[in-house]
Length: 266
Image: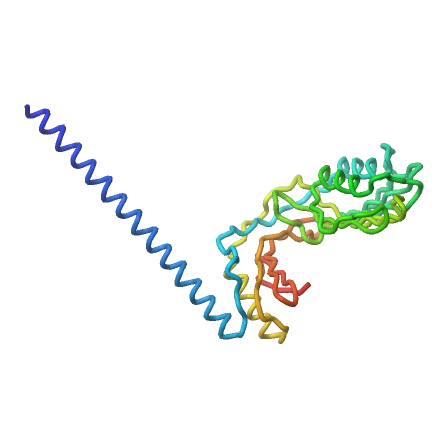
């Protein structure tokens, strides 16, 4: 009988403890929600005082990206060249970090900073749009401008795990199905984190507001803020993907460096 009573007391204590912990967790969540609401109200008031409206669709809880170290990927460069030339050809080192690939359909040059270009030969395509989409799928680019006919341009931007590398773009130009020019930038996706940034989306918006007030740039509304990467050349020609916040306003786009807080306008 005593054992049963003791067991019931222990169960009651555990139930009360769980209720206490649940209440504590709910209180923490409530405090966090209230603190976030207060922060958003203060942010909205700050921008309103500067005659700038904030879109209701701004995603301010998206985590910031780490800065990454990038190693040049000669194997993927050779695969890009093979797709553009329609055949695999050996690389020729030109010095200065430049590799060239030459076939019957033209020549592709790759530089150490990630830039590449195509010198036209005889490459003709029945469906240029399909070719460009295949290229994007193979090498991690997202289309930004489609090609509806066999004459015109097709543009795309490279992404890493869904985050745009905004200065790694590729532009195809076709004339009657012939690829007449191509310029692009490619960053290897084999990368390692070198630092974790600590600039939140809210911090980036405040930095951008300070920049706008200092420079007198025209800005009436903020429509979007997303984390992106920028391919940069570091010491000794080393490459890195620097974490940025891309802020889209009504007149311009701004990029806020997550490590330094520096702001540049596109």
